[in-house]
Image 1 (spheres, chains in turn cyan, brown, purple, red):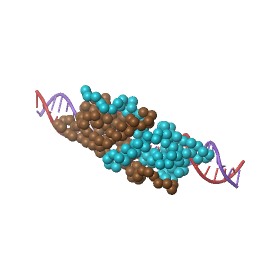
Image 2 (tube, protein in one colour):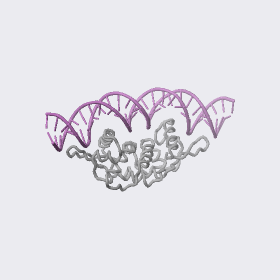
Image 3 (tube, chains in turn yellow, orange, cyan, blue):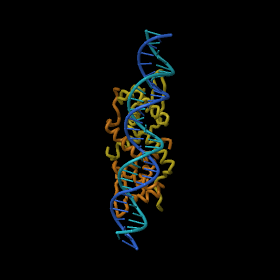
Image 4 (cartoon, helix red, strand yellow):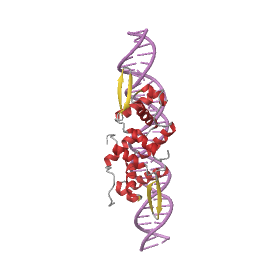
Length: 103
Length: 103
DNA sequence: CAAATATATGAACATATTATCATATAGAAG
DNA sequence: CTTCTATATGATAATATGTTCATATATTTG
């Protein structure tokens, strides 16, 4: 109660961090991030094939991630190409891979 | 569909990573991790005072994090001192602080 | 042993998240 | 203009998560 914390994590920052982590904390969405790290941009169809994910469900996830600022979408004709807006998100994956968190 | 992914993230790893991230993705639980990074070990009461969190709710969160292997508990008399089992979890916080994810 | 304190637990409830399904829209091609 | 393909959307259903409250347990102290 008297000591000082190392990190400068205000309650607001904790909220924000939790919000982002929550957006990321789902196997499909992690899969999307992983793919878009390796591919720069992919269409919904391509992502669906990679992840073996049904179109509607995938679309919901993509829309969600876009709304929350994690992805950007580029419509080209009928297709929509998604890419990472926050490249740094990948660091989370590296982090998860490198840490000993039972992985 | 023909290219090779950089990362070695199998579906199982994605599941596991999502599972851990989900366990972490909550303001109170991030607060706990942050505290336990700075303090080595703290009693439930101490954590509750820091985080202004009601005892029962906090206890639920702590128990949950313990079950999922993120924390360890050390009972000393009436008190229970919690500490991080996975020190590496802290990297997630660093990661969140350093990345531009709207923080 | 009674009382006080620290923590845990379980049920009930509220809320949020995820998945599914049916349907809509928009562009391309015939 | 009809059909086909790619994607989005909205409603619903299924499931999971977070919170609260009342109560239990264990330990310490008088």
